[in-house]
Length: 329
Image (cartoon, rainbow, N blue to C red; front, side):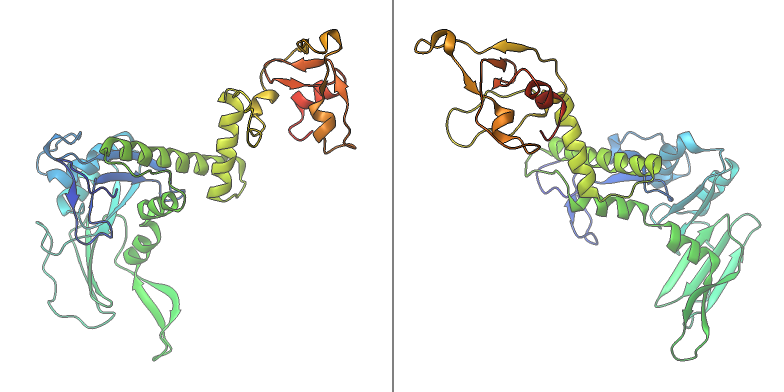
């Protein structure tokens, strides 16, 4: 999360587009992109359970995965987390793993130093498979769930006219990895972040955007409806306003205030228009529905009744009912 203010646990990562910021460890569901867990990195005080022999990266993985262990899940991670020790520990807990790995990780086998394009080399020890594959550069992968087989990519080499092949674990990794990046992308389209020097406000808005993203995903899974992120946010805001907004006193000058959705949810009862000194018992006001109706011909009709909470003059029938039951009267 981008943040350049003063903060003791602010991180500097030169390879990121936003080099300064707060680091989050995020666990996402591969199929839906639902954000399942988040840990904020605060240095030595980070809220994680430390596991001996796994280091900080392995301890982060084990803390995030704690509710999902021993259920047969498969974890996809990048090379900052991957290590033979971590993958073996996960395998003992009935959890598979696959990910890119640094060649100098402790426990990694030795591969051929120089390889040509599309050349692949595998090493396995019975439970783990280590793969070195040269595409545009050397790629090292470690997996406990894939065999050492090649898979067709569906593409054809424009020079040799042969089908392009990749190791199966590379294909699966490319397909399943990236849920966290996609979640960040989705939140970046319409984020609610505001410029502030307070880090906790930035974190609050980040978590709020994450909650909105998760609710959008849940809505799609439950209803099957495909709507844009913007449309979902508009519907969400409209629903929150209709349920929780409070009426504002109408302005006596300038443009009239927007129609409040509270008229459709709260309890309303007709009352007589307060008498004025000049008109007395003959005090009348123009009915709002008759003046601005889109369902019938507009007309200027006077009424001696009104809704006090809405401060709106209305005919008793049918305008009072229409105003409080129809969104577009």
